[in-house]
Image (cartoon, rainbow, N blue to C red; front, side):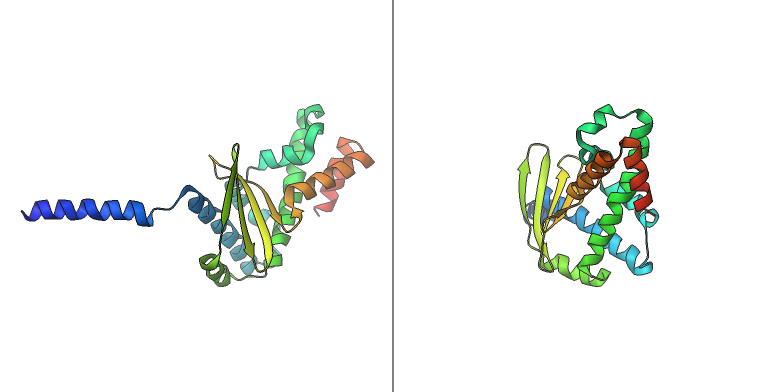
Length: 193
C-alpha cells in the first residue's frame, strides 16, 4: 500500500513539476544569453581592461561567429579568396567583440547587480524563420537579441539603435569602399590594436 501511495505521489509531483516549473524554450534561451552577459561582466570585474583574448572562449561558445562575419561582410564574401575569408574572419571577430565589450560596459553592472536585474527582467519573443528575437529593457536601454532557434547561438545584439552586426557591416563596407578587401583587412586589424 505504501509503495502505491509513493508511486502516485511521485507521479503527481512529476506532473506538477513539468507543468508549473518547466521552462519554456524561450526562457531557456534567455537563461543561456543572460549567463553569457554575467560571464562577460565577471571577466570585466576581474580585469577592467579586458580585451578580446579574455572573451575568446565565451565568444565562440555563445555566438555564431561565422554567421556574424558573413553577415557583416555581405555580398563581398562570395568574391573573397579563402585566405581573405580567414583573415577577415580573424580581424572582424576581434573588431565585433571589442564593440560587444563596450556594449557590456555601457550597462555598468556588477555580477551581483546583473543577477538582480535578471530576476526582474520582462521578455517578449518573436519567431521568424530559423531565428528567435528576444526583446527586453536593461537599465532603460531597449535590447534585442537575435539568435538561431535550434542552436541558441547569438547572431546579433542591438541596444537601442546600435547593432553589433549593423555597425560591423558599416565598418567593413566603408573600409572596402576606401580600399580593396586586403586594405579593409589591414584597416580593421589596425583598429583592433
